Length: 324
Image (cartoon, rainbow, N blue to C red; front, side, top):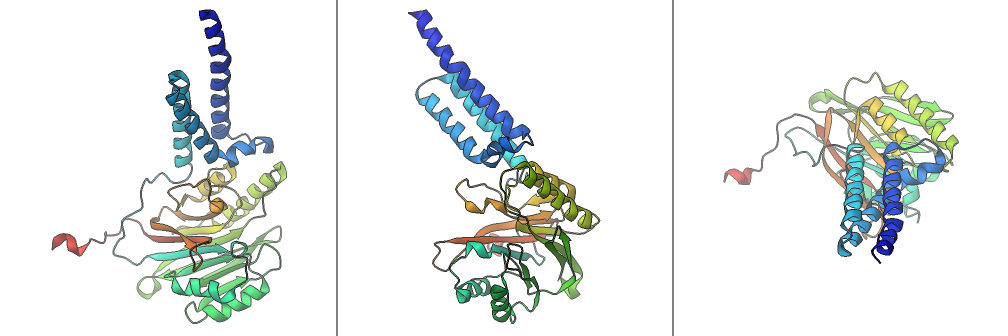
């Protein structure tokens, strides 16, 4: 009887351990073959699934499998955290001027109410707004409705996915468009501070949608290489925002962010959030004091990202109530 129980234990224990270890290894190692990308693209969901398995083993008092499941969950947590932004919390607001950035994609706002979208932008406290998938009609509408509050703008409207636009309350200088295989990338600088002495470079990019094949990932890396070659000499602060159509912890995205010294503004990853392909990154000169999500006026649909960035190592703004 003991031998039968032992054999049944082994038949379950070793296959489950092998499944946990191999799955975790594939997510962390990230093989470049597109066939394995399901593990990378769904790393967060898989991590929660392994956590659920660990809880199940806990309740069934299968402690050895519980140990392996929780160990794999911990490794995946560390991997995902170090692959996005190592800072555990948002920075405390400082005394200097901050820059509030909105990034949104027209395809996430697909019911065509021009006035509502412009009102959402105008009612925000954003200084710099990035809009993507800008078609000629949206381009005309946005320019007309935002010109008074956002007098500085640049746009490249297109009937394809690649239309871009940037609207700013602050002066924009050194605007330039460069291409990778006919895909536009828009870069420039925002002037901040007294007499515009502080300048923050930005680049907005829309990469082609993913079709989960090796060609897509190779072309994506080549696109990132083009951007890196254009911006690698940037000495001051840099912001990169866009729809990159991959998650922040993929090899291609880490190649891009590591080469330019960029950090993710997000501090958490929601596996149910469809905006995991939208990103706002910043260089080490800046820090994120707040990260939020942009919703429609009825708060029913999320349409973009909202980030507050400030210069790093400036004096912290203290709450005056603390001294009263």
